Amino acid sequence: MDARLIAGTIAAAGLLAGAPPALAALEQVHRVDVAAPAAREAARLSTDSADALMHGDYAQALALAERGVAEAPADPWPQYLRGAALTRLMRTDEAVVAFQRAEAQFTADDMWGRSVATYGRAHVLDASGRCAEAGAAYRDYAALVQPHDAALAEMALRYASYCKAPAAASPPARP
Image 1 (spheres, one colour):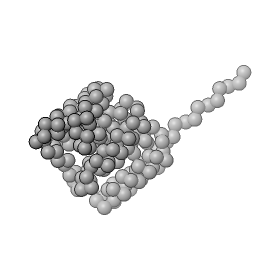
Image 2 (spheres, rainbow, N blue to C red):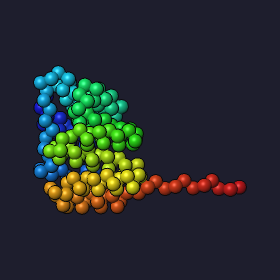
Image 3 (cartoon, helix red, strand yellow):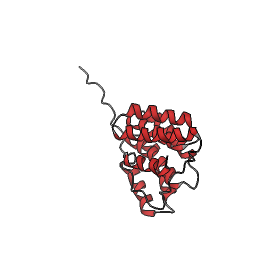
Image 4 (cartoon, rainbow, N blue to C red):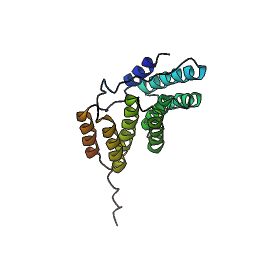
């Protein structure tokens, strides 16, 4: 399977919805050596997981991503997709761990992969109102993209300032 298909499917799936626009300089396509059967199967599972996400079947997307992780544990895309599915299932802590694993697995020269995983982590923390953690993740993202696009880095820092923690529950009224 062509790695461009995987990356294109992931982008089309809206997994980067709300994300700053990807830059050509950061869009280094993730290369997968699909000569090995496990890598080929993980690539297929990644594409199927992204498709399930596009169709709103988050449980299926998660199951497929987890199978992809099992097939090719060193491939960051199934881990990234696992994080995206967990985000949609509102399982924030697990999503954060999946995005962190994907970040660590993308090679240093795969700036696009690392940036989308870092942004995924920031976004899920922001969406859950964990603003201090989201701010740190947005700063990580900004530091990563700064050398390529200062405006994009600045936008991420602004996003950090927009985070809103959930309102505290009001104490029950006394009779």
